[in-house]
Image 1 (spheres, rainbow, N blue to C red):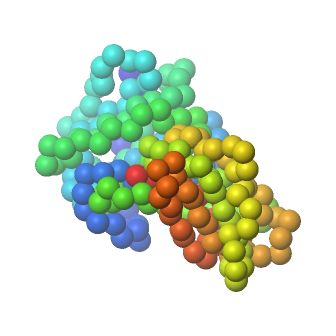
Image 2 (cartoon, rainbow, N blue to C red; image 1 turned 135 degrees about the horizontal axis):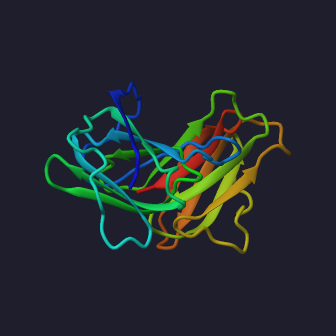
Amino acid sequence: MIRKYLTVAACLLVAVMAAGCSLAYVSSDSSGWANPDKRVRIINQTGQKIMRFYGSHVGTDSWEEDILGQDVLQNGGTFMVNFSNENFCLYDFKAVLADGSSIVQNRIDVCQVDSFTFAGSGGTISAKPEAVSSGNPGKRVRIINETGRTITRFYGSHVGTDSWEEDILGQDVLHDGGTFTVNFSSEDYCLYDFKAVFEDGTSVVRNRINVCEVSVYRYSR
C-alpha cells in the first residue's frame, strides 16, 4: 500500500504543551503551498509513545496496515511517510498512543501538507504560527481552521491599534478544514494581533504575530 520511509530521530522542538489525548497539529508547506512529492513528516509531541500509525485514503473502509510496523514513535521523534505511490490527496490519520487512546484526524491533504504534529493540548483550541526560513517578504499569511468549529469573524490589527477594526472575513465564514489568505503588504507593519471568533461565541486572541516571518497560522484543537 503505502511505501514507508521511516527515520525516527530526536526532534528538538520548543513547543510546550500540556500532556493529554486531544489533538493540536501544525503543518508546513512548500513549493507555493504545495507538497508535490507527497512526503509527510509525522511529529510526536503527545508526551507518550505512538505505538501504531495509520494513514488511509478517504473512502477506505479499514485503516489497513500499521505504517510503523515493528517500530514505535518516541515522544519528540519524527518519521516520514511517502504517499506518492497512490493517486490520492486526502487521507485519514490515526495515531494509537501508549496508554491505549487514539487520535484520529480526517481529510488531511497530503498534496498540500508536508508535516503533521500530534500533540497534547488539554482539549483547548490552540493557535500556532509557522515561520519559513526565508521569511515572508510578501506578508501573505494563510489562516487555517482545524478546530472542529466554524470561524465566523477574523481580525488582524497591527500592534498599537486601539480597536480590532474590520472583520477580514466580511460576509464569509471559515468552516472547519478551510483556509484563506490575508495580504498584509498594504501596511508598513510586521507585528499584528489576531482574533478569531467562533460560531459558539468564544474567541481566541494571539498577540504580536510577525507577518514578515510567519506565512501560515493554524487554529486547531
